[in-house]
Length: 340
Image (cartoon, rainbow, N blue to C red; front, side, top):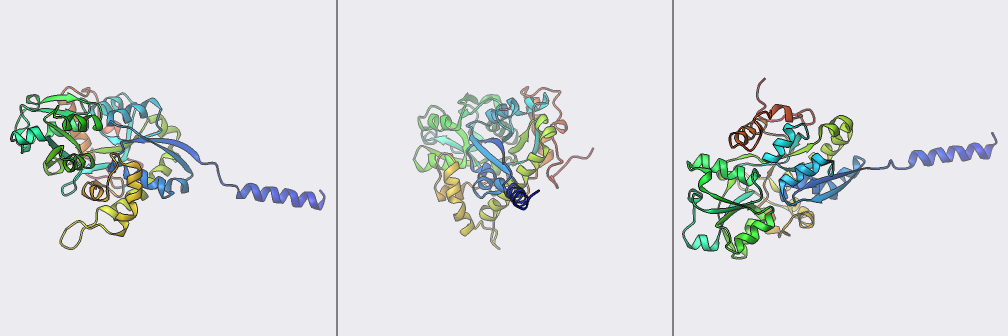
């Protein structure tokens, strides 16, 4: 081979070696809430790209819809609340939980009990007064339904004393409350604070004050776990970096135990504004920055409790096994793992 041909071949090989690998495209769905912040942060700060992933995010307005879209293959990964519908799909082998999203942790506001101005003026001022009221939630078996059910158990009233109105989405719930079409709703902090600031509702309490629980998870289909495990591992490495950034910005406390927000929180405001709905202000982001485990660890025992509660309500098939729908191999150190 002539010298110039050798040099040409070497140059071509060098160019090939230097060329960036083609990113693996994936679609991730979540609700447009602060609770999905690790996804938003990982995308905007290049953590997914560094893992060789090109992530398209989809905003979905109800947790059940995230589960359905993931099970059907419209999403590669779902990040959202755990609902009766999710557990029924998982029980049929359509989904598995692989990591944690957010949870209701004492001291961190997330989901609020909000009453309409009409109901407030008529004396609805306490979470003990839900019996006999009309309450808007997204869907039967939703996280909001579960919150009401566990509140009823704690406070000693029957869930069927509440008239539930199924409104399909958080924006619909906010509109119904503002129009005095329901007495109350349960909704995320950003929406609750906007309603209160607009004079359309009053916050009477927070779920974390009553019934802390594992709200959400990261999940995928068993087929994706089996055939695309390296992709999921890459995703979770980036996701955890996003969760760690979130924790540094929004979960810090001072020596007196008071929450503190500094430059790191301010640096994340533009990302929150881009992805979170309704569009938040810095004040509502800080007020509603809920708890997200910085290592994406689940409270596993709570998953078992949720399945049992939904089964007792007739909303989840009795044959669903909490253990069978969990894959705990992606994240180390999960919390409260039941003994065999």
